[in-house]
Image 1 (cartoon, rainbow, N blue to C red):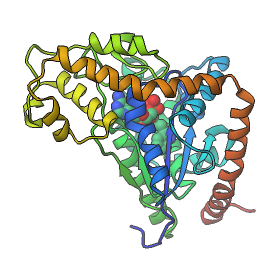
Image 2 (cartoon, rainbow, N blue to C red):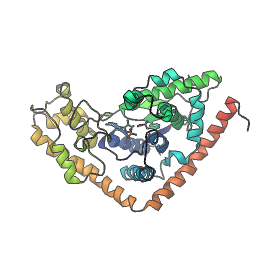
Image 3 (cartoon, rainbow, N blue to C red):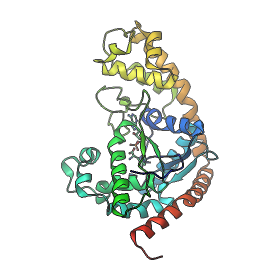
Image 4 (cartoon, helix red, strand yellow):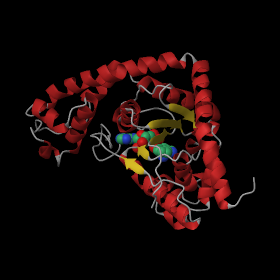
Length: 339
Ligand code: AMP
Ligand code: TRP
């Protein structure tokens, strides 16, 4: 383990693979903003374009999606004067440290990654080598900043455990106390926002059904319509959280409400217990529109000024490299590379 005191620093990333959903917002972006504003951490947030290209990306789309994601970060409240906002490929130390970690991580560790197994499916012989190595790059993203805290949604838990394993093995193999053993930050009511059509599936930008998700670019009418049509059961809402246990769709809508309203689930149940969905859904739609519409309007405005986005990212990369270059140089020295 590590006895060194590291600066409390947050790192997290999102893939610019097209489209941001309410799941990304509640599970990631909104919490990134909260940690930025809390004031107890340095915060670094990243568009992970190198991760996105582990599956095929049309180059023009990748460029567009990276800028759109940057707009999404800023519109959600990431302030480039408070946080370092970067695009992964513009800070080359991520990929450089990832190579070292490819030589630390073991094949067996990677083969256990459930996200790889899900994404590769029956096609495992034909996916890119990058998709397999993906979690070692993710560990490098985090550790090249000596980050200590990583806010993510529930689906990233296993990758963060692997990041800890890589740090521990590196420190052990080279007899140093150099990389921090990070803390995953997976908390709140919305670490796993589910599909609006199926309460057992994660809300995802890759779901073929657009009705299954709320996109951050959806307009007010679309948001309201999707919530009105969301799958539910015939019972009225219970007045205590325990009553949601066997009701995944109801629980999902309550969790979304709780996260958007910044109220505990218990407080929401006190307010809405006993109501029918026909009454609750319009309340949720109104709240979702109130919170999300300003973000999509601001995203559209920012997308009209791409030079400004590019300027922010260039500045972020410069700030980032002040942290990453010395950490990479020290890593090279530890492993025996000549300067
Ligand atoms: P991705 O879009 O896969 O790069 O995910 C970016 C971030 O959003 C990660 O921290 C994910 O855990 C989080 N995320 C994605 N989908 C969801 C969801 N349905 N519920 C909660 N968090 C999510
Ligand atoms: N793998 C993450 C996802 O798909 C994205 C990511 C890449 C990330 N590097 C990271 C998240 C580092 C947290 C920290 O959601």
